Image 1 (tube, rainbow, N blue to C red):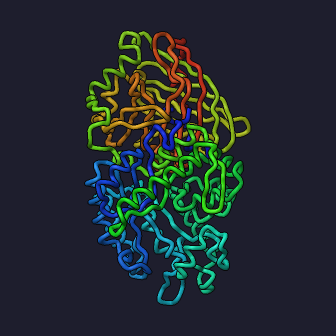
Image 2: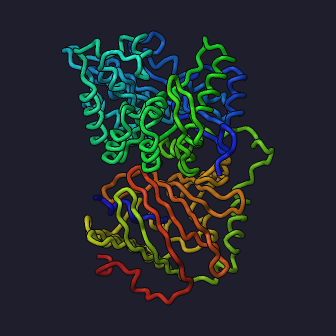
Image 3: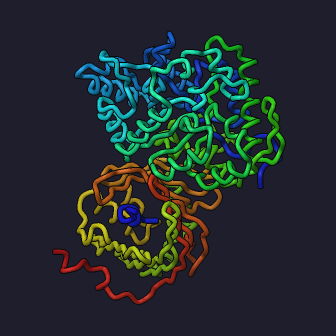
Length: 576
């Protein structure tokens, strides 16, 4: 259990067949869409991640271009409805300059707006070296490219392997029977020379272990659609893995209802809704639009209601998942697991209600007022928090204390029985940490800058010193609440996203880059909940921290203006 690097941080269903919030279909394939299709997206309140791929067996899809140019153009002209994912191209993987060329090519796609990269199932199944060896997901030749994606904060959408039934004789009762009957090149039972399902999944797992800082979304339930317990095992073992549901809803529906429901609730932060629907040049627009709407209706009913749904010969009862889980699966997980998706899907159109966006200055003035105003804030010169921290990732609980003093001093302590004490302190100039794994460390560089921002005592008054740039980027829903989105740049160039309530302008949360003790950087998110007014100042008594590797929740109480001994903010041995 590696808690040290994660703990020190700032901290009714609708009666219709669609939700009140906007959904993100995180796995589709679309050509330039006709107006009737865009109207359907608006009507259904759905936005899309348009996924390109390189399939050596499919003419027209066997090279990245012109797919990438089309996808970038579609995204640019969609008015925020559609984003896109580039594709890894394994051709020429035996060339000495393969990694350099692929990194340069993908970097150019990122500059054109790609938010993720797809690796296709050909890797592991039908791409061979000149010596006859299959190219596997964990091959060393791919490692520099995957490391590059991690360094750029880009997600790998991994379609690796196929359903396990691909390695078995055709079975008319199997959800994939028709596909393999019509596409025998992917029916691996007919190709015993190819790697087994187990070999491909094991290579995928080794890839996950070798690149722990790379976000990976396993397309099509990670090719483990036959059993959600198989998926759960991998999610618990690899914190950098999530899965999407693209083209695998029937596989979920065939499994016991309560088993699937428990899985989705337990792993609610690791499942993204996707459909794998297609709208191609030769599609009949009216027919395609009707098919998409029907699929969207079916998926929502299955996840959100108790209705009985007919799927082929099956009659299944909906899961009636809690609203918070639905919002994550249908929207928030896509934004969290695909960094860059939120700004890419920010519409340039006027909001539906016609309300113009306020300026950043107006939002910050309203935030200050919502926090009680300058006079009330200036009356508080120290704070003491106490409470309980629950780390759901590891199933542990501990105690929490935090002491803060103006100007900008901070001490935060977590105690976990049987594991140890974690402490972070900032004295106004210097910062240090102490943990069972790393001992005492004086912080510098990016880590010192991050602590300095966390320690700002009166954020509503001093937010201008924290961020050198602030702009309103649009509207969104965060943790089920309507929010204004502000994009911010810190004094040292880091980019943050802040969400302020549309209703009362309180700070609902923020997302930022965090640097850990081992030098790893990753995007993390804090959500502020359960505001209560104490001494005229709203205080979030609940804090939720989310990262690809850990989720923890604080429940706390606060006391204003306690007497604090200044020595508690001093580093050991005078900071030497």
